[in-house]
Length: 121
Image 1 (cartoon, rainbow, N blue to C red):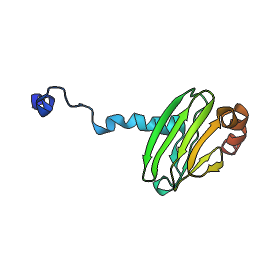
Image 2 (cartoon, rainbow, N blue to C red):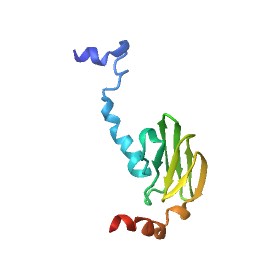
Image 3 (tube, rainbow, N blue to C red):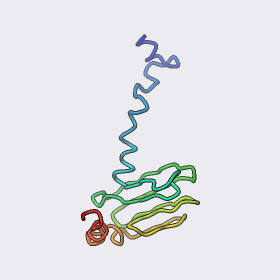
């Protein structure tokens, strides 16, 4: 009955009425805003292409190899590449480690224009 559902563990409203797929949009933010996409099985090789319109934000993605952490602010992007993985950012390969890259070096209108030519035909 509805009362049984709401009385989970004997505490009314102690349980979320959201289904597991209710969190789906949050996974889209990681892919769309930060451009995190696997390029091989198990995230051994992955891509990071953050949107230029994002001024700041962060995301953490758990993989079998460890956490991928991306922090973006107006001046730099900080990325943690787990051991045993490689990240591709603006067609440059980064091996496992911690990186702090000036934002203007990778996310400039000029870099985006050059990088995106192959997709525009």
